[in-house]
Length: 321
Image 1: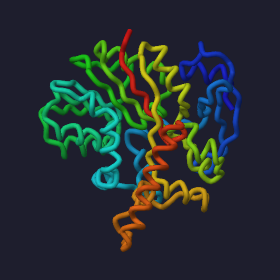
Image 2 (image 1 turned 60 degrees about the horizontal axis):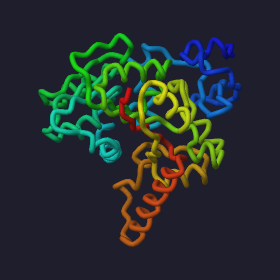
Image 3 (image 1 turned 90 degrees about the vertical axis):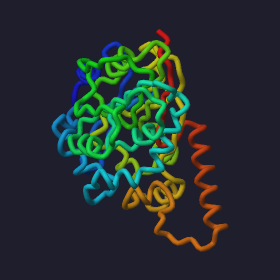
Image 4 (image 1 turned 90 degrees about the horizontal axis):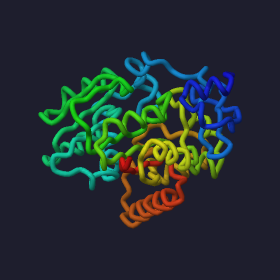
């Protein structure tokens, strides 16, 4: 276990106080680990002993973290599996995409969200940063647009661009970053005054984890690729201190059926296709039953999002300083 003062220094939190307590957790790979939890806002930091390396992100990340639990999923399959989710993620910020908008996406993965944006001709440019070599190549080879620039690298304080951006978006990225406040500061530097951010992260107050306290889910939820575990308060605070005005919203990625499966079995479903919703392979002959399930899914998502106990959080804000 790493000394808490050293941990806070490593993640750039040295000035945020010492109200942290160690919590024993089990990682997805089965190892026992330590999570440092802030006693005031619930933010969690994985002990540095368990962090993965930069090289794993560049070359090996998809070997372990893919849509299917037992085997690597190719980028083209990810694109198909997550298409509806990527549409929903696009709707988070679509009203801020205007004529000649310059958009930066940090951690574009296989390019699901950027494809949604580039369907529209009224943007100025789209810069996509993605450190994974296979995903970056898949975007370059598969998306033909003179408005798109793909950067196969990490977003750091040294990242340089030829413009300031109107909008910066990222999805499931900030939790991987060692120093999130420094990361947010760099976003601020590259954003126009009045520019917008839309940043999605997993929620440490997720209902299955925080409300139902599902043991099986807890052992799946925590894993070595996530350094930070954000709560609504901790996420909002980090953006506020760096010159943003905004708010946190809930966003439920996975379906009500998936939540019920976790509660009943304590185990993950075998693939993201199953977890995200009703598979197209399931033949539901009674339309009233299918309609009932769809309504249940809608109402569950609406409820947990409103209560900020959804599986994800989204910070939506504006550069005001």
